[in-house]
Length: 227
Length: 227
DNA sequence: TGATGATGTTTACAGCGTAAGCATGAGCAC
DNA sequence: GTGCTCATGCTTACGCTGTAAACATCATCA
Image (tube, rainbow over all chains, first blue to last red; front, side, top):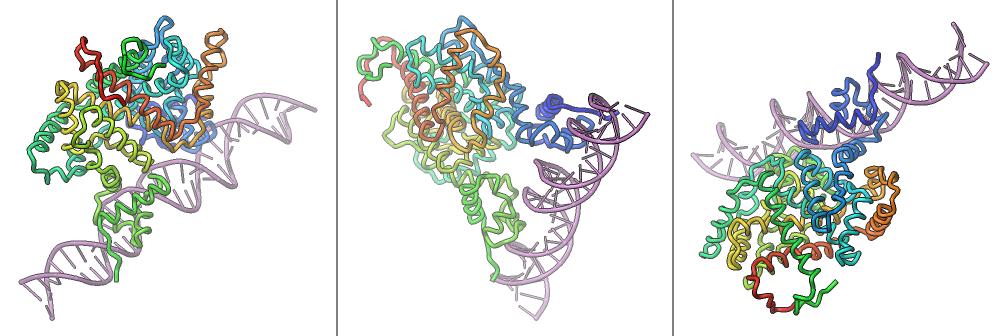
């Protein structure tokens, strides 16, 4: 009997390959082989490779899981979103590359989830436009931190550092020397997923604090902002 | 006379092609043709394609320009960094893809620049570890917002939205319906470079506000130097 | 003058996405 | 059962990719 496949099986196989060997290893021929089928057979169920990658992202980043708890206010909702998105990135490192290009992260969030978060911000007195900006901002923080701390890291940081900042050697004043020493200490700490999670919180917290501060206007005499 | 080339000429040609037709159009053969030379000739001056792409990033994201003004304190320094990095992304859309993978953005910043920013934060009373986290955080915000708002956008957002959030149709309660309507309004506004810059500021501002808040002792909400 | 090293060229190979045409088999009307 | 139709997997083929290896040309220097 001929082995038969469908779009879901193809997507699962592709995700499995990507989890194991990275997105670059997901070629039509290899996915086909994994399923005991020729590479061209996939085109009966999937438009092209981009379509397959999109399906992989859809399967992997479940939008339901992003919904905040029912009793969570805006701050907790945004924190929840950030943690869940981060989890997805950590579990499927290739997903970050998909999100960055060509798909956008926001597309992964369902309309219901997006709207719920906007509503929570609205409840706190944020106008609709600002709420949208802040939602994008929170998502951007997760993506950005993930880009800077999550694998893959194919070359050592030191390699690129030497290559990309050759002018440092020409600096001679004492301030600059101190700065370079500080930077070296900064870079000495490893950038990995664990530290990434710390940095995520270290970034998200002041961001949310800043929002909170702007939501309580009576104490800010010189601020003309006000929602 | 045979046309001669060097690494800089190769890099310039590659950047020019990428600016025109995207990073995917930068193939060894095409860069060679652009220079009136066979594709293989490039390997005399460049290790491989990854090396070339790295050089492109190094040339494009000048680390010197990222140095904050001499008289700038920590906040202004971080804002300056964010604006300059954003400029680079806007001017060379392909750069974002390079930064995300395989190179990391931090690698583009010279040790001197990194150290200077850390010193400014240190002057404000931030301990070294936290300063590093905040520096990464500020960079992450730029990258994340760029990922979500900058071209290329090869498929319409609606396309992926329908594909990735099919469950929305099953929702029937009124709250969820409202949420979806809010989300639709949110998505209706275009995500482009101009809005991206707005969102960048809308994200960076509360982030920096939050840092500032944590730096000021609780007894002095006093703020000068209005914007 | 002859050797040497640098550099551009040619050829070749394995891999990629995918278009086009062929082969197989299930489901269905008669 | 017979024959048609359609879905689906297979084979072949094309142009593209990065790059290894061998060859050709040239400038420089002893």
